[in-house]
Length: 284
Image (tube, rainbow, N blue to C red; front, side):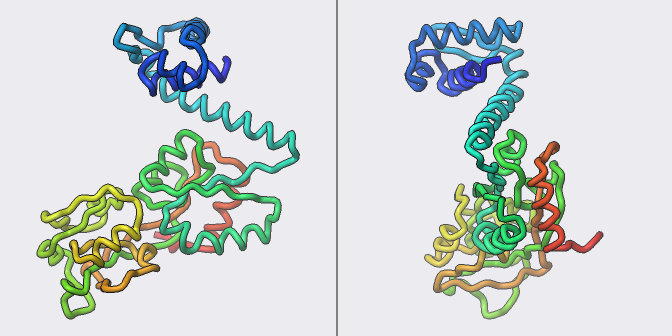
């Protein structure tokens, strides 16, 4: 099956029409139509429902879409790896990681691993909720994140990362710790991507919800006195001025670890073993 036909199909689905797909792919609409007819003939089924309003997936197309996305990603990796091999280059180890990991302990770990395996190169992608999708679709070879996002894969815990309350100085009580339920008495900056509802026993009702995947932005909002929040310790390595952190009672934590896809590369398995040896996690 021609990988370019699959790429055309996914482009058409994303753009919503053959004409828009042709414009993006710099080809004619007739070429897109012919490629789709040929692909459906090869598959032996209708994938697209076409009308004057554009295109949409048929029920069979909806069922096949995840496999087509996976095939497109696999063929792209195959083509990239073949070009690298022809040029005498080794494939980089593709790592997806939380920003709090990539900006704290990961650089030192990569340095130590590279000293042992100097032939290894690295490709780092930073994300949060995207980690599971990257693993599923083969966009990364392994992921470094928490159990909420990664436990569905071949998961190995590495370390605990405790949560702390983060206060602007203007609102901070004169103590070193604060009960979780007491956070309900303050305006609370809630970032859904931080999955705080998974870690706090009581989520404050007075929330300013911000879809933000950047720790420094959230800390800046707290420093400006907009409200309080709760963040893991690894996210607090670059605290701005006018911010105080307090321990939470009862304490809560996220568990960070490494996740491998169901069919990992040898390099990914080797790196995961290196991490598990460097950060041995207590047995339950």
